[in-house]
Amino acid sequence: MEIIFSNETLALVQKIIRRYPPGRQKSALLPLLHLAQAEFDGWLSAPVMDYVASLLDIQPIEVYEVASFYSMFNLKPVGRCLIEVCHTSSCWLLGAEDIVRHLEQKLGIKKSQTTPDGKFTLMTVECLGSCGTAPMMMIGAEFHENLTIEKVDEVVEEWGEKGKRSRYC
Ligand code: FES
Image 1 (cartoon, rainbow, N blue to C red):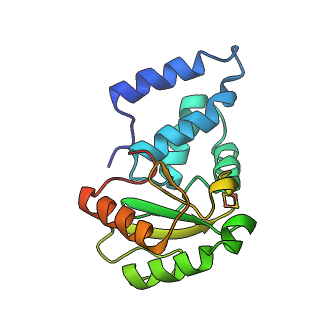
Image 2: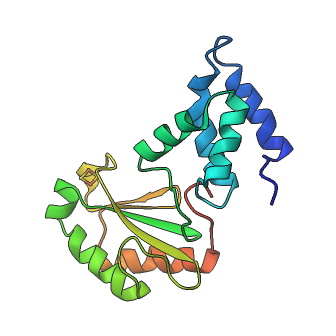
């Protein structure tokens, strides 16, 4: 498969790059990685990162370093719906472990795994900045807060029906 952004995304890429002074195009790396992850199945393969490097005229290693530093970038395939349960202090104190256990049981997988039908990936993540409404999880681009087991079930079932794609649907 040839790795190339759609024309629409390429226009956006050029617009983002133009925000920065000539020679500083590397500053556009983070937004381009988000676009790449959204367009290429929710994760960043080596060829995708190489493509981003070529667009910015930088070395592939510079892209790998950034992509592997931030947990919002997936370096291996994920399901169409990425569930990220915060397990940091506030969420942990208010039941994040029970939520993860429930999701593992419901989906029949362990954390960091994907369901065999490729629909869901379950991850635990560090604080997502919504501590006042803990416990919370992110699914796709949506925050779900003040979670209860019932609310988790509702959200997951709704997403399962929609079959949405990853973080940026
Ligand atoms: S501790 Fe969970 S959002 Fe901050």
